Image (cartoon, rainbow, N blue to C red):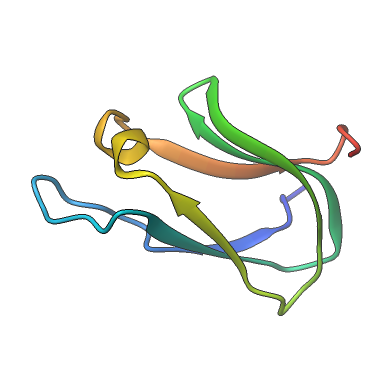
Length: 84
């Protein structure tokens, strides 16, 4: 089964580069989803929040620069087993 995340923008962040005070990460889903929207650095959750997501509704995560600068590879997913 494919997860509900349809796309994330930007997909890559190159360092060193000037990064705004809060890097806006845009997310869209392909189907209705309810659960914990997570930003993962490997297996470690660096940010998470319970959300009710709908297709074509834009979600913006303002990630602080320190979160992106210290991470090797971030992944975004929705854990639908966790309810708000």
